[in-house]
Amino acid sequence: MHTSLSEMFFDLILVCMKEDENLNRVLAMAKRMLQLCFGANSNFIITTLLMLDKIIESKDGLRIVLQK
Image (tube, rainbow, N blue to C red; front, side):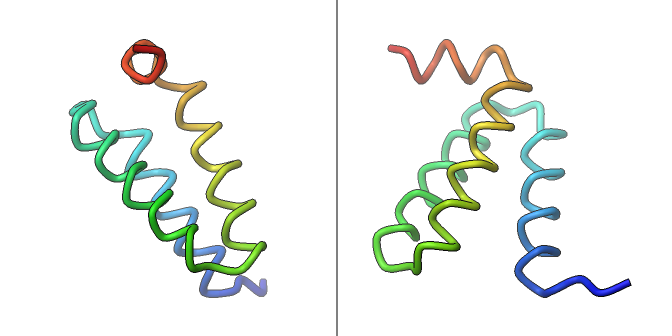
């Protein structure tokens, strides 16, 4: 089984953010991930956006906060 370091990083972040019950902490982490996208390569940006989409789908409260 071959897993790159970046795959393990995004998997860890995804699991942590999905399991976290504190929406403020999840929102803060999402904000920081988006801030990292400004200086990152396209692979990182796409993966971050897809990961954040999965997190928003799994957390109804987060979707409500982001729509405000």
